[in-house]
Length: 544
Image 1 (cartoon, rainbow, N blue to C red):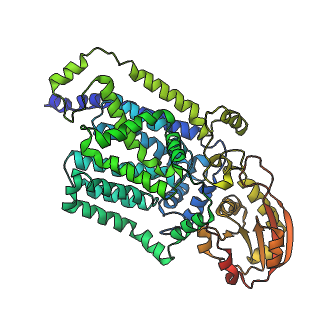
Image 2 (cartoon, one colour):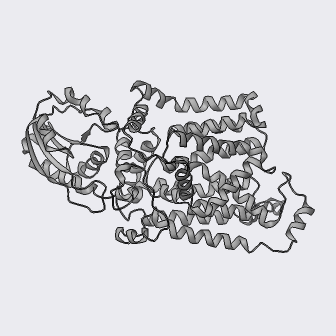
Image 3 (tube, one colour):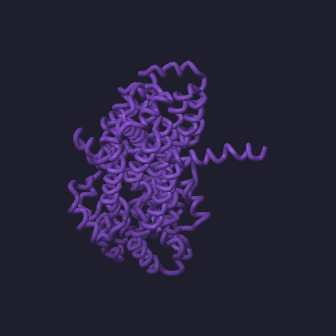
């Protein structure tokens, strides 16, 4: 009896390693080590201050994001502290998990060991996913949630079990609490279902229960948006009206898609897309091909940033890896599972193209290593600038204001914040002790980056919470300050003299040649001409 009990477990472990998942987990672990090692090379990123500040004010929504990331970083900081590697632990874990998810999708689509390996490597080397693992942001978990939804779509179709649509709805609801763009993915799935034979699922109660689950999970944030008069919609409208983002033409948009997931993987994900749309083998999953087309068209028409489409590529990479594996091994794409005899014939075929398997892997890994410094802070700023000149393409600029920076925005926005906070502290120390203790001198910053940096770096030194009209800081209001004394960052003296009777220039933050924001002026202002700060608060609103 004991021998019989042990027998199933040994083959199970053997199959686990034989089918490639052991190697996939090793690749994911290597990715995690890479991120943890390099994630503290520069400094805190502008948006990371925003997430931490929002995490200090837990609520069901914020002007520029749903609540999931602030909730997670709040508890992560409470448990592990504020070190930069801690702040970026969640994205490092998520990016590494995405490698496993991509391989699992390949396995569910019929891939074998090489398809799993190839799809995992594609997810490992994609610049966008490397970037996601290097910075805390709503992009960090977005691909994981999209691919969680895709996984349950595949299971629902493959196992002919509509109950998986309930889990699709649960993941989609969590996705809406992380970033609203997953709604476009959901729209793509609905359109894909309507355009394929899978439309019959709408006759099942489970897909409607899944939709209800997504709605109920999203409901708290929806109610928050209604209560505050749709601040996220206001923000998006203001950004579009200002023309801040760089609008891409058709060719540039497609080209930047190839850059996001590494240009050498383009044949793989394109093969996956065409297979999902046209092949007999992947016909049951055609909904995912239509979903990609809907998402692509939606983000292009809406002038979305190039990375908005990035979360969908793992499923295309997985499908493409399955197609390439079949092509190399000479298996027919007839939509049927091969018999044991057919599989034996496949194994006995001359290895004419088997050399392609290691060749593709080596080329992809080499390309990934070459492009990794674009998004992972492996090099010093000086060495990065020299490296960037060797690239055969220009790094994308997503906002016009970023064009003048020495480094790309995802690096330049990691510099200069401590210098801004230090100059604010200099101004604070000039305020008489009695006035500081009286609690009626606030610190006003122009944007959430400046305000968040002050809250993060200076709160431990006893400075009051920062004020700002930017994003959710505006909703937090003047916090009881009268405005009789304000330390103001980043404004022009001429404008401040129109608002206050006394304006004293303190200095500018130390110049940092790598920072997007540098040499920010700091002033002490007294005698407001606009009445109390509460009365003048509506005019500080800055949502753009």
